[in-house]
Amino acid sequence: MQNNKNFLGTEPIGKLLLKLSIPTVIAQLINMLYNIVDRIYIGHIPGDGSLALTGVGVCMPIIMIVSAFAALVSSGGAPRASIYMGKQDNQSAEKILGSCFFLQIIVSFILTAVLLFWGKDILLAFGASENTISYASNYMRIYAFGTLFVQLTLGMNAFITAQGFTTISMVSVLIGAICNITLDPIFIFGFHMGVKGAALATVISQAVSTLWIILFLCGKKTQLHLRKKYMHLKSKVIIPCVTLGLAAFIMQASESVVTVCFNSSLLRYGGDIAVGAMTILTSVMQFAMLPLQGIAQGSQPISSYNYGAKMRTG
Image (cartoon, one colour):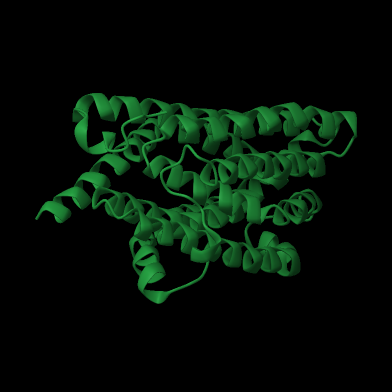
């Protein structure tokens, strides 16, 4: 933990970028690895592995959209919080934190309702077949109840990174990964829950990560505190955040649309096995993007903080 609260504006850029980027790159790799391990366990379900893997693969575009809504709020809110920190106006930064927290709770409840009521129809539209729809809907039904934890883990972790505490944000991902990798075989094979077990392990892991993040943001070591008095929606606070985060939302939502197109075409011309193979390939291809995403996340608090500091000094 940094003792100098202004280290984002005082330390050499090269050293600071390296210090912040390494944990974020590692966090991205950990996140990707535990997703791959998740698929490995699912693929080894006795008798149903290939169809189960395909069913979970069909859920991925929906999961991407859920993540995109988290990015809509956090990708705009976190940089703006860093800017206000650069201005030495932590009160405004905390207002952004509280407002984004409250908005993500509202969004998560709406998404949960949509997934519970129309999840099966969405999955069929997104490429599920008669053979895989049961696996996909079983996974998504349980995952839907964890939407709140997904939103808060992804969204609030960005505010930890925004303060320059990238090691803490890495630990939050690591905690979730350890829980998920530990619980997967217990639920999938030990309790014979199949894809339901994989979904339940994911939800519990995200809940543990959420608890860790909230405890940190309410603790003594953070510079920005999550305060109840700021948990409300004010247009002058939240609209600039959503506007700034719109680009990240569109990028992730577009990736989801591309995946749906792949799944639909592969189901038509290659069958369920082809969709399952694409699920594996998608996980592998994401490795190429992770280092770049990690570096971008590490540089965000530096650029935002110093932009705010420059605005303060004129």
